[in-house]
Amino acid sequence: MGCFTFIKVMMVLFNLTIFLGGAALLGVGIWVTVDGKSFFDVFGALSTSVLQVVNVSYFLIVIGAILLVIGFLGCYGAQKESKCLLMIFFTVVLIIFIAEVAAAVVTLVYTGIAETLLTATVTPLLKRKFGEEPSLTQIWNVTMTELHCCGLNNYTDLTGSPWLEKYKTYPVPCCAGQQPCTEGTAELRNVSGCFEQILTGIKKNAGVVGGVAAGIAALEIASMTVAMYLYCRLDEK
Image (cartoon, rainbow, N blue to C red; front, side):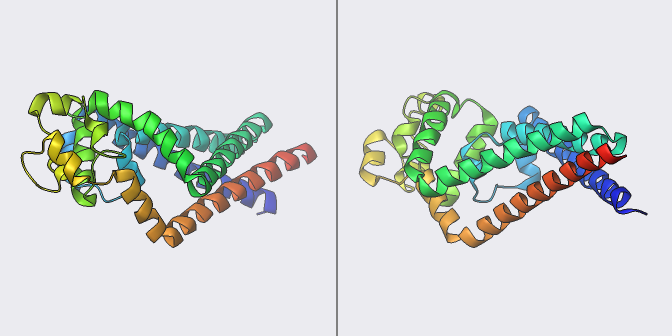
């Protein structure tokens, strides 16, 4: 087996794995969207992670769909020796790589900007959906209980939410366990927001986060290198 053939086979197998992984994530995302309660019953409370500040179902669907596209382009492009598909694969992975680097820089260096962006996105979502959408409500209740936090920045993120209109009180974590959790009690307790807690957790596990990020970046660079190698070698055939 020549070098070109070996790399081609490895490219196909690697991207087939990505394709199947994307399909699995997409399936789980759809499952959480359709029946979030059964998902949490099976897997229990979610562990502390950044995923808990967004609607995990939509996150999984988006990531799954992206992996499906990448896996298909890489696998089918290598198998059919299509220069067009290989170049599209290279371009998509490059765009994702640049976006990840930019996001990492914003998150690690410009934490204030990251918090502003999250606040502009998550806070309106909480005010509209917390207490109304089961999966989002479950995720945030688990997050606030486990991290002993309230909202993204503080209790005011939940002011005007369907939860408050329905129960006439804030969630118990917003008052550090004291009930009833009224606005006055929440203001007095001044429980910190979940963004600060999650950021602290990320900094505490910076080595693990950095290692995972470096591993993903290495895989993306390797994928782009292999795709470009196959692309260039096709000119010689």
